Image 1: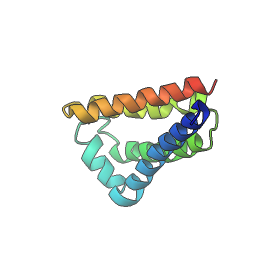
Image 2 (image 1 turned 90 degrees about the vertical axis):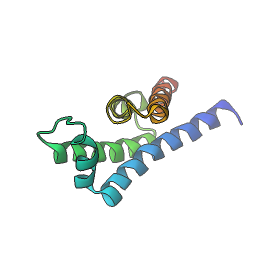
Image 3 (image 1 turned 60 degrees about the vertical axis):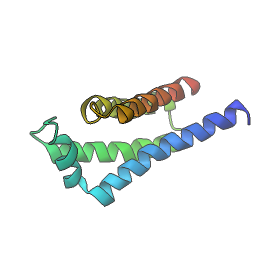
Length: 117
């Protein structure tokens, strides 16, 4: 397997990671459940939890599709990087395995942006 195939598989997996997470938040957990269990729990932007839940869900879906389509990867990967870092430092701070996993995924998105140049 050459490096081009590895990068393609990496891009597909990272796109699916965002897309599936967004779809699960939309259809399984529902936006109100996301707002209640994550954003309100840490009091982040507590003035508008449903709004921020929708921003998160739509961002994950849209940028997951954009990464799968390989659309402007240099810029498209930055919102997922921000999502992963915010999640790591707010929601998963005490859970070190999840914290490290979010940092690894964020660095993988960053690598994807450099490989697309």
